[in-house]
Length: 293
Image (cartoon, rainbow, N blue to C red; front, side, top):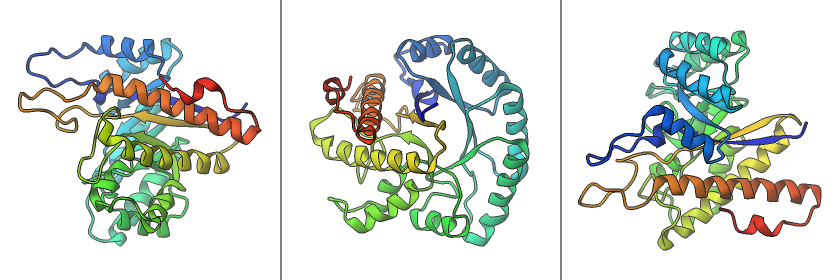
């Protein structure tokens, strides 16, 4: 079986958080994700009842999920892995909810989480994220020096904002991001600018940032395809968060439609994947791939 791409939608991204609009019921959110052609969802594995309801729906419709967790110590991962043993998951996405000042303080935590993951036979990816162990790009690169095989979930929007790279991004900073992407085993999709962690895909003034992220994601996909097994699955989670991630106007309303942006992102990533596959196979590009949904 060939390598596969699976595009997921974040359930957090389905929250509306608008005073004049009711939240969509959970079953409505899940039906929207299914009907839009997503392959699955990102699911918080903190509340067992919630996780069971969501994964029950996804399993019934042939979809997949990543189990998201936020451990503050080694033992916090144990109940998550126990829940995964019961409910399943493509992998665990671990946000290390600690803020050590020194690499030496991180080593026992990463060693412990990796040991538990190996014992459980579950793939665990450590996410790059602000206000976590991985908040700083340079600090995370030092972690990779200690753990060259550390499997990351790359959300590089945090590093663009955190480091506020000059525009255009120079080769030195591209090289730093590529080191992250060469350890990437899953991607969280959000487009940032230097100053804003989440911007709309559709605004004309944002197209340079869209091109930048599409280039980084292309590099990540090509790197992964070289490292992964022939039958491996790569997940890309569309994660366009609600306010205050989403930019709002003076009335509190969002300036763009995140759901439409998520659908557009899904189409762009599927087209990108297909173009890479076709190029590697020596197949001429398809006309429709140039115009993703």
